[in-house]
Image (cartoon, rainbow, N blue to C red; front, side, top):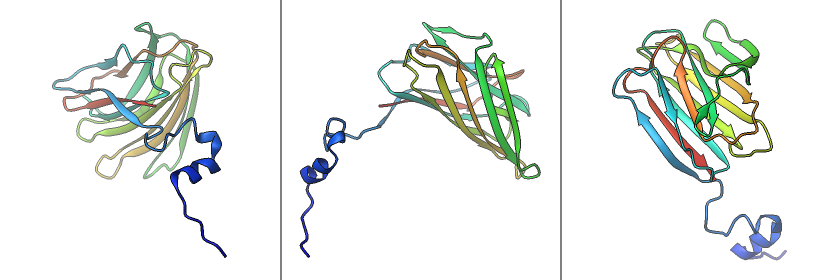
Length: 195
């Protein structure tokens, strides 16, 4: 039995379809910081405008505190810096708590997408990771996936949301807000681009 020595070229030659994607040095699928906001006072919404169209996907990471308990966090998208507040969103939710393991909801024709449902709190942060897929593709609707969780000293929730914005426009702006409330100081929102 012979043993061959692996090299960069021999590995790449075995996977020719990837030769034009990976040069052997550059990280494919790398993430770059676009903008980050940490609130110094109470604010009803946070927006990101003039989002570069040079990435494949976007990721928004949030650590949100609310001005009151049991409020929802929602997001809207925009094109040409105009946020769409029409009934052009559809979303699905699956969440659980310590006492209610599964709760699901689906809403078509909504005016926003949910990031967190009935979960924001003034004392315990709600943590979310939002993936916005193919945000600049003008040939398809835009898709959102959210993984989130929040502890309330043992009585928190965790959930998965998905949804879409029924628009062929590229996303160049987004608005994240609290329904019927505000984000407290020290809430953080960080937007990343994924190559």
